[in-house]
Length: 469
Image (cartoon, rainbow, N blue to C red; front, side):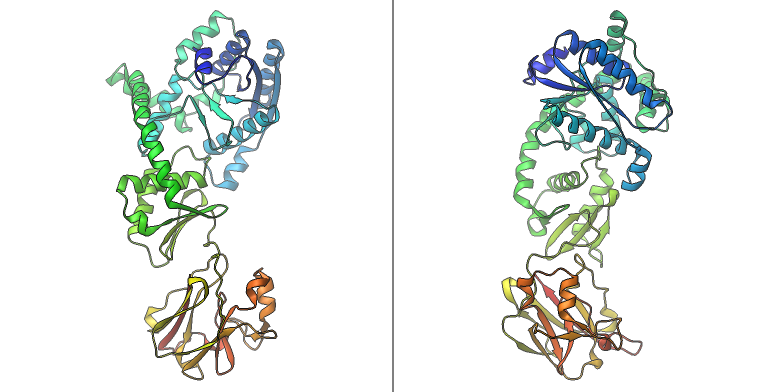
């Protein structure tokens, strides 16, 4: 069965295969099977440092590799610390660290695949985990026998034992006199998978003794359907999404709104999975929350998501990001020719590259805290009565310009210093948009307004300026 699965996946006995071995019955049996059948294998063991004596397990696997006459690599990480720093569960942190190690070693030894010893029992447990977490259709397929994963773009993850039950593995170990380790953490029901294995499945078997086989069959049936749907959804994702920057992607809300609800949910899942590949499953409640956000944005146009992710709506786009602020737009506020604005007029003024300057007079109750986009503020509110005249002059930056930003009473700064601190490209500083009132700069686009125009207790009316891209 093991050799057949590998051959169907396109691997021969000459292929370099990296086998993940914990020392337990499943992985020990896999390593032994492959070595007995003369596959070209290298063993790798990872110490999660989650329990005393875990380092001894790696030494056990090293001894196994010596007996089988194959190469061996080991690695370790402080999973408790990693989970805390990255705001992951212990299970997700352990999985990420383990697979990062395995694929690093696979690349080092030029392996054609990474092999794990997941069995049919593991498949059933995975399907149940996904159901309990509110899985979509993709989660019901369980694990793939052979697939490219989020951990490496070209080296596949292969599970040759996925069609073999744990009882068959135990029989194999007995027949071949294989020694294996007992991991006491597998009995710890603080772990979600262990509770499913030791509590939920036995309870379900009291309703239907064939429940494990039925769930295994369900995964295969859904996978056959999903293989077709996957191609359609990938094509849709490729057309609709835009990579704005590393760790951030976006969708056109106009095009997104035209899709059926199922397609919208799948695009959201796919986008989130791109940003947090270590997560084994995206919870349905997160998808629904994002879907509602696209239909009814909150006033801040921003929501926080699990795993340190964020969603924004800006300029008819939905952004999913690892950053707590929007990425800086690729278009900067440029003013090639100066022009004047009458503050009584509520209108839009065209700028360069399709950008525009919006001008509004509003009551104080309409104030909304400006939202930063990668450290820039593209809209600003002013106390209308603080302005010296009813005319604003919009012009480009001039050498020597100084400005007294909000929060700095009695002190002015050079605009050139502001640009340097924000790392604004030199080529766009020359025509950077500046707003004057009575020969005094009241706003530099992207920054806070002038201090003397700040909103105060006796403010009644606001002037709102906004650069839109």
